[in-house]
Image (cartoon, helix red, strand yellow):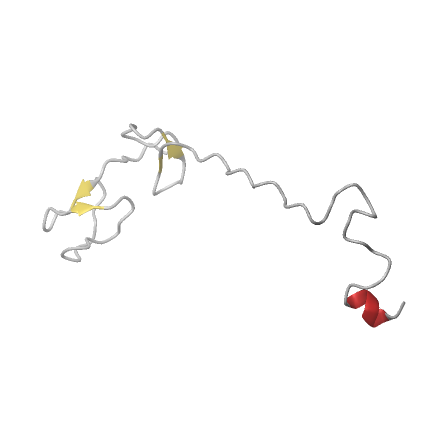
Length: 92
């Protein structure tokens, strides 16, 4: 058999499982989803704490949303600046 026949799929290798027990025409089983931890990730250390936790179990930082000192808007966890007025976020 020539190099080109082997490259293009000809030859003695069959797709019916000739070499080994796995059949190539059967689909692979569906991948199982990886377990996702229920909770919230700390913006400082990325430790996952319980969804109802108010403080991080890894570093102790508050997980509650903060309010902007400039305009009072709610800041997202880990925000360094206010999305409404641009004021720098201060540590709680």
